[in-house]
Image (cartoon, rainbow, N blue to C red; front, side, top):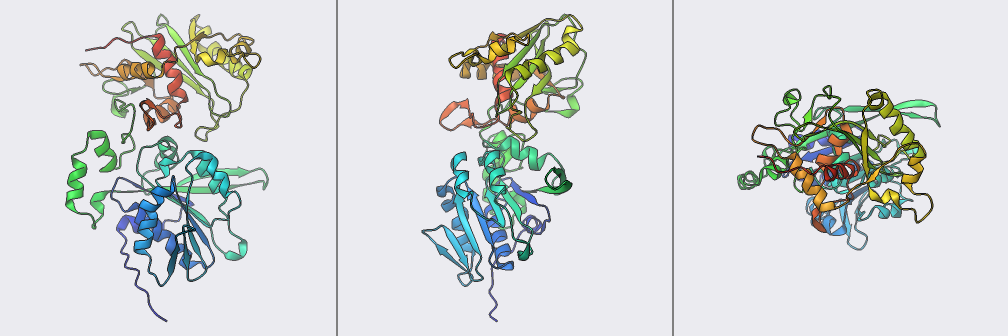
Length: 448
């Protein structure tokens, strides 16, 4: 039997990626860690080991596929084992397996794959995809029992882009790098529980012996946020991030210096209170409660985020149900202390062109709003101003550490590539939107 030399010598981190036993794995973080190489070689190894299986490798567009993973595969796969079909964007392997390169430029494109059976599912630059695309394509992941295999998902990505928040929440936050996180899911249909596992395997350009030093020096010269993302693989600062002022410094939660996240404290009853609201049904709604100090600094001290726990998926509550939930939360605190709450919201909820408006339905439960200012750029600039630190290290807006959905979503927002000054609304922007209504109601003057 002829021996075929693959010519692939994985780095230590690539080898860890290939050998990990998690159901779903994310590789990368920084630039230059060999992400595309790891993806295409992992797919090849699995397809050769299990004849007749299919691997699907997704990127946002075919142009991105051709410039990255397809080019890498055509360069790396020995011709003796893999033949590329240009018209079908597929690699046909000698053992009957296939590696298919596919795109999903719009969330609706995911339905093109409704009839697929995928044994090995890959995403290159996972943060360029919406969560609903990822979740739907995972439903195509299956194998007949006689195949004797366990299908897996393998991904690679840099920080940033529209999926930054959900990818970070799913892979980076649950466990330290390289350690497997367990997620328990109960099946009502089967009447039992199963544990699914995820792992994040970071790679750095300095760990890739095939890179030249010139590349490292080039990354060192980038602006701080870009350098931290591409050189250090940081998930708290990245290219395209809107609110680069954001700092979450756990060591300063108590003294509140040089951080936007603070430890909860007892708010004086005399401080004015506000509530901001962004409505959602299939997408989350978001409620934020604010207190303003005598100096004008705003503190987000409580929130109610109408999500299921799956990023950007709403609870599907009616306006009346949301209103009753707001009233119940305010009775537990503000009403008991005799504090009046000034509520502000998206003016769109007053639209009555198709029957009773959302606002009118909420009024039926005793919750009243005034129309907020929905000026997108002005609101964004107001938030920038409030996030700036003054000379003493204090910003104009801070968030209690218990407001986890604000902390999870707002710092992860990216710029819209088509509107360079605005936030990309494909991201999870609901807490951000209601924050805009609040900050526009309390304009903050520049501090020293």
